[in-house]
Image 1 (cartoon, one colour):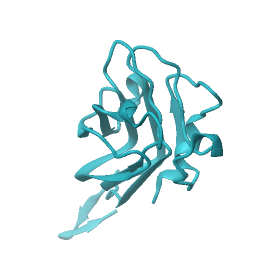
Image 2: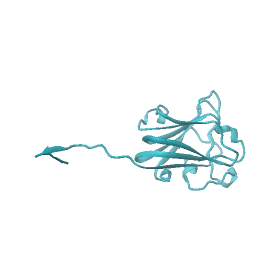
Image 3: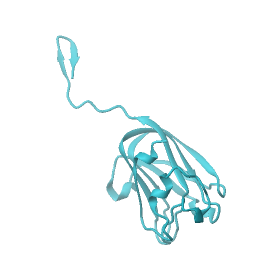
Image 4: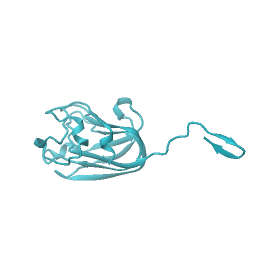
Length: 156
């Protein structure tokens, strides 16, 4: 799980449900145990994670709250390298139809690369809560910055 390496942020914070709670390593779905995020109710809530480097993401797992579990319904998971608009313009990995109350669901994002992961709900009024978000993958191959060919051999 590379999520704890990143910096979490969200559109707003309510009831002390700060963004970093989703990457604290604690899947506890009980909000009063201080392991879940919580945005203020409003239009288009989002949560994002900026990783220190680009990863080739294989899966994303999200643990839902044990109460008000429907709040995550129809959220989108986005992965890419654009930091613009808090990552809300990046390509979509998955749409979360639902996650059982207090349950964890894994989404396959094989082949997607990026250092920005965003969970967003496109709605006129919504609240986004998550109790844990885990990102699994490997470092993406770095882009060569410079290379030269000397006598038929590539030299970096």
